[in-house]
Image (cartoon, rainbow, N blue to C red; front, side):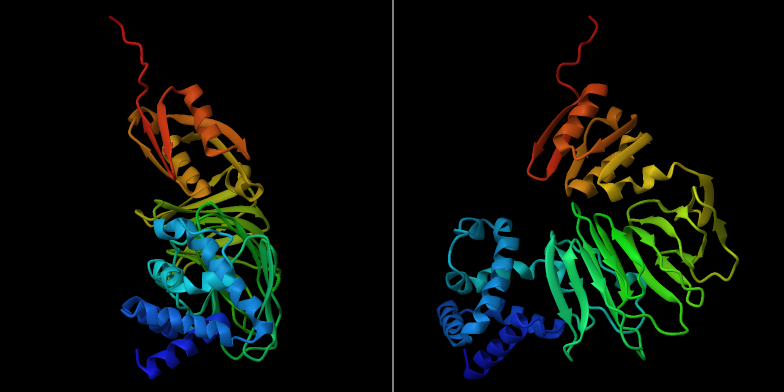
Length: 400
């Protein structure tokens, strides 16, 4: 490894630790580590680098690598065997192998442009962490129930975290839109308060792309994949618009739930309070106006809306960590369970997929829920790691 390579890696590590690394620079860092054949030389470099970090900054460095270690320890057999109680200094020596694992993860590869994003630029991360992608492409792992602040390059506070909520501060008038993106993986929920005071609750497997600050005289537009509940701050001069694939949902101030998962055949907008207008994206028409208690269901196949009265609790119960099903097929229930528990359900017993259930669950484990369905309709299931396989019951009694 040349002295130039060493200096480059040192510089990139410094930026990584300070959360100032761009996507391009992170690519270079990971590529350097991945391709480096001189492991002993790299270990020496890391040890020397650790030695020269100022004492008052070591806690920041060790915390950062501790977080990486905690997050990726269980994902690779080589890392799993390591002792969690090893010192941060010893952990620092392992960073090459840890970062190599990270290369396979998508959490570092969601670059958000300052221009208005298209729906295709919104990523649903495969990571098991909640991640925040900033305008420069750098990615921050957001711990649940954490407390932190994020500042811009001038040191101005832009985001604060308290528990399971990120809150954006109202800023001085921007001249252009700058976007951030929050990704919430399966098995987790997270809340965000936008700079205008709009509150958003993101369900499992969801992603929201939004401006750090909205512009005077312009619509407030955000982009959603997954499911979210919006409590929109009223601003008559600046309509709030949620873009979800084929549709736009426009409001001035109201509460509503949108569910747009790419694998689902429909996009559902359920109005709780106020009024919303739903219309097809890029189509100049009056759209459909909803009143509280109504749902607009957009068919991705027929490209049309169906408006109907619904029990809103069914569509918003996830906010209270509940699962509510009313005359719901197991095929749909299965998808919701997979998202909530970050699990794969392989149903090899067709009778179950066709069953319709009415049930409410609160804080039950996935095993308890499966047991409840099993009482109603007998079947066998086996759970291994994050997968459940459902099969025909082995003790079925047949007539002679």
